[in-house]
Amino acid sequence: MTETKKIIPSRAVKRLTLYHYIINDELAHGRKVVSSSRIASLLNIDDSQVRKDVALCRITGKTNVGYDALELRKSIEILLGFREPKDAVIVGAGNLGFALAKFADFKDYGINVLALFDNDPMKVDLTVSGKTIFHISKLPNIAKRLQVEIAFLTVPGRSAQKAADLIAAAGFKFIWNFSPVIISVPEGIMVRTENLIGNFLDFVRA
Amino acid sequence: MTETKKIIPSRAVKRLTLYHYIINDELAHGRKVVSSSRIASLLNIDDSQVRKDVALCRITGKTNVGYDALELRKSIEILLGFREPKDAVIVGAGNLGFALAKFADFKDYGINVLALFDNDPMKVDLTVSGKTIFHISKLPNIAKRLQVEIAFLTVPGRSAQKAADLIAAAGFKFIWNFSPVIISVPEGIMVRTENLIGNFLDFVRA
DNA sequence: TAGATTGTTAATCGATTAACAATC
DNA sequence: TAGATTGTTAATCGATTAACAATC
Image (cartoon, rainbow over all chains, first blue to last red; front, top):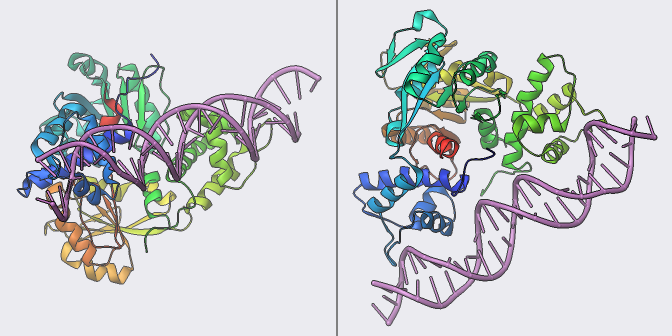
């Protein structure tokens, strides 16, 4: 097992998600058609880039008009799997964990948060957006019972590796890491580090 | 004014930030030297990529040994401007705003959060990590007084455009947008949308 | 029609990877 | 020395942009 199949380039997945944001907004404003140049100008990208990405959806637009917004939205949802919900748990019930647990938009994109975990006994049994906080020691049992493979790691950097070890031992396959630390995991487990600081620096650097 | 000068490629900035995470960890474990292959294997990238990025720092390693960890760390800090703190405020004092306000690591990377803003009167005058929450109506005054140019936008999607309008009107130059919405701003203001959902989908897509 | 927009190919651009001489 | 690592050039790869015929 070297790599997940990747028919759609990473960049395209990210852009298509942004197109989906835009189409939602266009529809909310009563616009039923959206053109490649409209999307492109909102994102400051090339319009032929948009058309190429849309081609991945296997739909066709109307010459002189643009794309049917509902049709394009639906195609993106199918292509990117918004309609095949993926379960996840959050490890670290701090503010960031709470924010992700409460993030209503996740559901629209097929991300289904089931529960939170923390090592603070004071937090255990509280609920956030209807999701229970469990003690971290329950992670292996509950993970197995719920068959969940995805963990969001929202603990402080100094605890990240230890938490990752627990997550790995509990049989998870994907760790979405929000801490500014590179964690090591056994072969076969995928880690994605959300590099907030790097993104910020790339953004504001003079 | 079309574009900020960009001597260092975006990708390199992000990778160098990750190298910094790694060097911190290596030093914490008493390792004073770090090689390109060590960094590369932790990040699953090519080792010549690492050497190329390091070359941007204008330091040289030791053949047969690697890079001096302290020297490389310092060079990255200087190159990326960690030592020239940038002030910012947070608009939206929800869980995500709180998480960013409390995120201790920001300081190490030159990100200095001064205050938070919210439209909920109940939150006004509370403090988070020593930072005061002000009513959103105070944004123009305080922004001018503090000379701050960067705003982190952490309100829900449905309020994002409205909040962005206030931020733009208050004279900010950079908006780091965490909501799943593409916001429109006047010419001359930079927006970066942190595409969490896109990143997630790119990560776990089968 | 004239004008606007798609779909797609070709050209350009930039980023990653491979290779290897130089070095200690 | 032998082995490991850097620094750098060349080769490859992939992504973006330009261009334009086809269409309504």
